[in-house]
Image 1 (cartoon, rainbow, N blue to C red):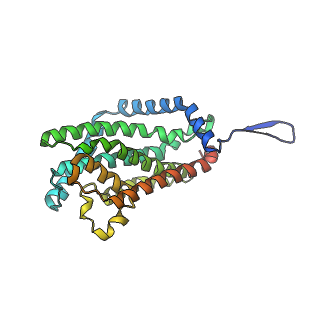
Image 2: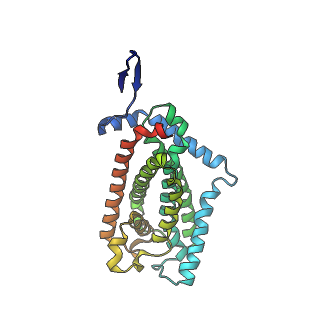
Length: 281
């Protein structure tokens, strides 16, 4: 916070975000009630102002699972790792749908909250972070559907299910990292709002959602794992299917490193540019 005086003796109050990491974390904690408010408001708006409400969180991944099961399982005849193909696909749709929704919500969050940002000071990082909560609720609803699907096929999950929160956190880190970059860029360059749907569509087909990553040739597996969702999806399948789902450890390590880098660089870029948000919004 600075006081700048002009030639007339009048003062302008300039509020700037705290630059040290510890001060920034304390500031986020101090504004935690705003985080809760924004997250709860988004949840209410999401499920209150839709015709079919919660069912929309189930219909999208369910229809995608059916299409992928027919195309990759029946027509292409790709291996299913010894499990019903719909379970193979849906166990990958869970983390992918969560990542895609969280990234889209966070990338558009600053524009949606333009009036609040231009009038009131608070840590701007709260806005894209709180928008992810709605996607987390969708994830839990879809997770319940996966449970019913496994009961239908008589398939029991493995004991590795306890590691699912780790891969959920990894998907959150990757989504927020990309979301921080895109939300900050979207404030100044509105063209990025047209890029996000393309990234989601492209990412769906280059990620191992409709097929197992084991079909990727061995010499390309490490390069393929530069997509952080490869390690996340393989991890989710391992949690559900057990040892029948291959887990390429070098690729998982690379996916973790890429997710951490995306999150760290996203926070750095966001904090460096947030002082100019009000000028462009």
